Image 1 (tube, rainbow, N blue to C red):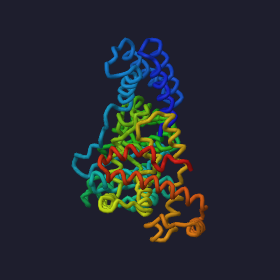
Image 2: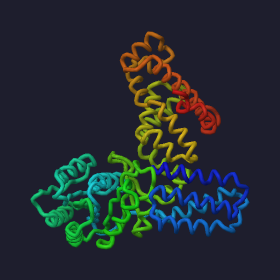
Image 3: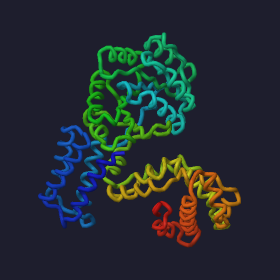
Image 4: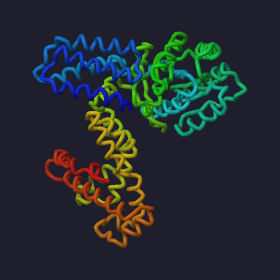
Length: 452
C-alpha cells in the first residue's frame, strides 16, 4: 500500500539526513522532491501545492530542537501536515441514534460497493457487536442482489429478501420496515452505480435517500482511479451531502493519490479503507497511522490491534506453556506460527507496518518473497507426527519420501529444516533471563532473513 510514494518520500529524508542543519537551500530541495513525489502519486495539483506551501513555511527559519536532527525536524513537520491532509483524526460512524441506524452506500459501478457492504457488515457485527441487516436496491446489475446474499451469509448478517421486479424505492421502504420489525441495530443499503455520474442515477439515489433518511451516506472510492475518484466523490457530495468515504482496493494502490486527494477535495472524512479481497480486509481509517506509513515510520498500533484480533490466543498460550515447561519447539509449533502469520495477512503485511525506510523495506520484501511459507506448510504436513515432533531423526531416506509426498525437492526439505533450527534457537531465548530483550537480539538469526 502506497509503496511508490513511501519510497520516494523516505528518499527525500535520506538526503536531508546528510545535511548538518536545515537551511533554505536544502528545505527548498526537499519540498521540491516532495512535490514531484506527490504529483507522481496522482495527487491533485491544488492539494500538492497547499501541502508544500505549509511544509515549507513551517520549516524555513525553524529553530531545531536539541533532540531532533534536521531530517527528523522536517519529517515531523511533513507528518503533521500529511496527517492533517488525510483528515486529522479518525472519524467513527455515528451509531448512537435510534435503531436501526441506516447506512447508505453510494458510488460508481465497479468500485467495490457491494463487497464493501459485506465487509462493513462483518466489521460492525464482530467489532462493534451490532446486529446488522443488509439490503440491495441495485436492480440493474445482473446478480447484484444474489451477490449481496452470498456476502451476507459469509458475514453472518441478516439479508433482506427482495426481488429484481421491485423498484429501488420499494426495496428501500420494505427493508427499513423489516429492520425495524427485527430490532436491528444497523441497516446497510447498497445502491446501483453507473460508469459515470448521470442524472438518472442521482435522481434514483436521492429518492432512496429521502425515504431512508440515512445517518451515514458513504461514498465508495476506488483507490486505483487516483484523483479522479475524489472528483466523482465531490459531484456526489454536491447532491447528497455525504458523511464520509470508504477507500477501496487500497492494497493495489502503490501511489496513494486517491487517499491524499479525497479528503481535501470533498471535505469529507475517509472512514474506512479496504485492504484486500477477503471479508476481513476492511479497517477504520486512521490519518496519523497512514501518514506514518507513507513516511516510512510504520504503523505498529494497527499491527498490535490485528494481532489481538487474529492471533489464536489458545494456541499462543499453549505454546508459551510448552516452552516454559520443556523448552521444546518442534515442527508442529513452527507450522502453527506460519499459520498465525498468514492469519495476519502474511509477513509482507506485517512488514509494511514496521518502521523502516523505503529501500530497506524493499530489500526485506525481496527476502520474504524467497521464503515459501505455503510450501513449508505442505512439507510439514507430509511428515509423520513422529518426524514433526523429532525433526533431528529426519535422515536422507526420510527426506526423499517427504519431498516426493510434498512435490518438492530434498534441497527444499534441507532449507526448511535449517530455517526451523534458526527459529528454534530464537524461541529458546524467550525462556532465558531477559526474555524479550534476548529474543530481540536473535532477530538477526530470524528464519526470514536466511538465504533461500
